[in-house]
Each structure stands twice: as C-alpha cells, then as structure tokens.
Image (cartoon, rainbow, N blue to C red):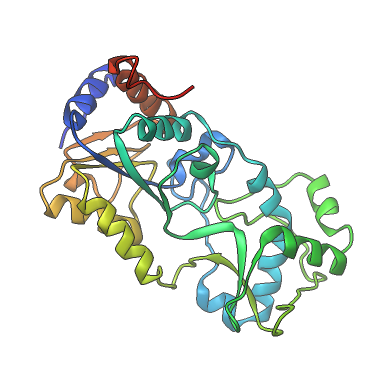
Length: 290
C-alpha cells in the first residue's frame, strides 16, 4: 500500500497502475458530496443512524417518521445534479477504460451523468415497492398521493430550511401528524426500493456485481469508506484474484490493507484529472463523442 502527499505524484502512480487495464468501479457516498448530498462517514460528517429494515417494517411510528422526512427530502435528491467526479467516470466509460460501475448510492447521479452500465447495488430513491404484492411505482406517483393526504406539509417543512441525508431522509422535527398511504393495488405496506441496514442485497444484483469485478483487470473504489460488507466484499474479491485495487477517498477506509494504492483526496479532482489523461492519449478516431 502506498500513501504520498502530492496529488500529482499520486496521479502518476494511479495512471501507471490502471494503464492498459479494464477497470471496474465501486462508488460510495463520498463521490456525491460535491453534488450537495452529505456523506455518511466522511471525516466531516455528523453522526447518523439510518433506519433499519426491522424498524421500518416492525413499527408504524418509525414508518411514519420515515415517510414524513422522505416526503420532504426526496425532492432535494431528485434535484441534485452530477458533479465532475460522476462526469469523469462516465467519460472514462465512453473512452473504453471503465467497463462498468457498482454504486452503493441511491441518488442515480451516475445514470444522470450518462454512465451506461451501472449496478445500483442498494436500489434507488426514485422507486417504491409494495411489500405485499411487489408492485413498483415511481416516487413521484407516491409523492402526489402523499401530498393529497398531507396538503402543504412538504412546503411548510422546506420553508424552514432542511438538511438531507444520503438516503433522502430530511431532518424534519414534527412528523406526528403525517398521514401515510398504503399500496393502491393491494393495501400492502409501501417501502422505498432501497436496501436498508439489516436487509440483504438481492442475490442476482450481487452476482452481477461480482461478474463485473471478475471480468475486469483492476478495481477503482471512489468515495467509499468500505465500512459495511456490502462494498468491502468487492475489494476483497478483487484482491483475492490478484487484481490491483485503487482507493480514492477522504480519510481511511476499511479496505486500505487490500489496496495497491490509496489516495486521500476528494473524488472530483482526482477522477477528472484521470479522465483528462486518458482523453489526451486518444487519437481523433478513438476520441469520445461530444
């Protein structure tokens, strides 16, 4: 493992490690901070206690609090736009360097940036699933129903200024009056199509992610502390197969001992510089589309 203080030197090493390799990418919340979405575990992040699956399904008071806060927060996430880091990875995919991307984020910013092969490991904020009949609806459809049931609630909460977490949970103090709605088809419990703490990632999604890592020649991890096994397992998989593992993240990660190179820095600057290096080496015929 190598640490250095100069980003220029680190970029040289990064480019050397990834040279002529097909690169799989794993991203976490740290890549989205420059889009205004706060990190969970970054060095400057406040303590957070995301709701668990058991709390959500087992206690109506927890569900009420969640939906009240999400009713306000999801719109902030929906309005977020990709930053330089997201766009750089999409550019590296167009250049043929990145073969695909696994993200632990639910913000859809990689897709919004134009990245084509994205595995949303933990789902996305934009869909809602019925736990009874498995029907899927858009978050916008649910928002319309919740607004009818709670007229003016979101507008009043937003007017006071809010903080939104990486799972679209907004800090709203008074949630006791919020009215929930059930599945319009079967009356079942509605849940965001997001993998909660205490809930397993669907097996087919995990298998697709492992296939992506197995088919690559290197793994680039951007903006993830790898604190939870959901992401760490991919670093372990790559390392076990002898693939170079590169980590770009502010602060230490749980996978540092697996890394060929770690860069303690923000994602936007490093990834943009890396994409520029690759783009400058392409011929006019191989250049990315404008």
